[in-house]
Length: 222
Image 1 (cartoon, rainbow, N blue to C red):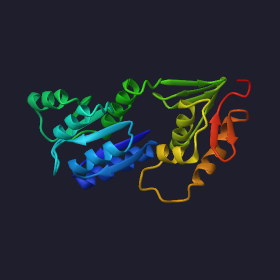
Image 2: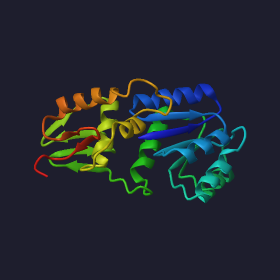
Image 3: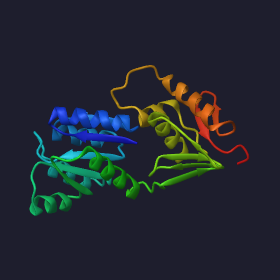
């Protein structure tokens, strides 16, 4: 899952990014409304966390511009203001949810997960099944048959992307784009490390290498 944070309070933005990264999200951060609109337009995100009071374009205008362009990415708006008018205005511009500062990080994560569960723009199913493998996006639980499989946050992110495109060949670059933020400039072979770890934990017959193209998640008999 890829998240864009548009927040001019740099300490808050950094804190949110670190927390969501630890949860397994790939997180991009920008600090102005203009940069937020550009980033959201140029890249594909599963969720946008958007502050209202921003330099350049404010959050209302960023949200309205995205919706006018047909972008249905879920938007969680943040504001230091508290009042029915502000909330109504935020939701009227097309925001999906609204959180008033100061807020609990636990509450933010719960809101993020709720929005991701019910996002309809991409038709994402909350539970993915491939043969006897089940990946539950809502609870982040992975089972094969009757066995629970414990994955790290990043392992889950890689598996979730493969499961969401089960049967298709997914390139290493696509996995990197989904699981790591846009600023990542490390070794792309990091993907191979996570694929190896997933194979070890999931067992044989699920993750297939398509030489020169990428990986495919599919049950051997299917």
